[in-house]
Amino acid sequence: MNLGDLEITYCGHATFSFKTPSGKHIMVDPWLEQNPACPPRLKNPAKLDVLAVTHGHFDHIGDVVGLAKKHGAMCVGIYETMAWLDKKGVAKTTSFNKGGTVEVEGVKFTMTHAEHSCGISDGDQIVYGGEAAGFVLTFENGIKVYHAGDTCVHSDMKIIGDLYRPDVALLPIGDHYTMDPLQCAYAIRLLGTKVVVPMHYATFPAHTGTPGQLRELTKDVSGLQIIDLKPGETLAGELKRVALV
Image (tube, rainbow, N blue to C red; front, side, top):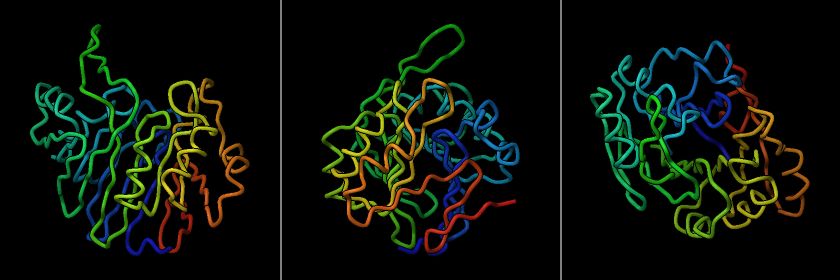
């Protein structure tokens, strides 16, 4: 498979940055400044056009407000979380819900189901943030990337695979707060996707799942590529790793 002019950069934990074929910059679940897995050179992006939020936990939404205000980026996500961002002074938000698709800067975002909680830490309160979700991003060159968000395995992954046929799946494997490698291996079979990038592992001691465990549990899946990007690495072209400087 060839990503064409699409670049996928792993910023650590569940944060991914995309440079689209048309040169736009998109980030899913922006948590940079306090993210211990994020390389220092990625903590202050020069440009952002769109910020997509799967759910409201601090390790997915931590830098949304600051980055949105600094770059004038459009924020997309579920209604309740976008309403919270509106109250925080974010000028540009697009709210939608599961099953819906919005197009921003030439990229289609389809919101998918996820099984997880979604409380937003706001001072000493936990604010209702709607439901946790995932996204299928369809880029201008036709490449489709599924960011599952934080989730356990669920049967809707079969539907996501059947309807959208993602070329690349970004799937959590850490355990404790998300699915572990055993559940992820089952998710891969439901999705039918042949290129998988593990995420949401190794950031904290509780995240015990590893790409090696996932490989062992999926060694019977023909043609599967598990690409364990290191934070700071970029996936580009014919699935080549590039360590950007």
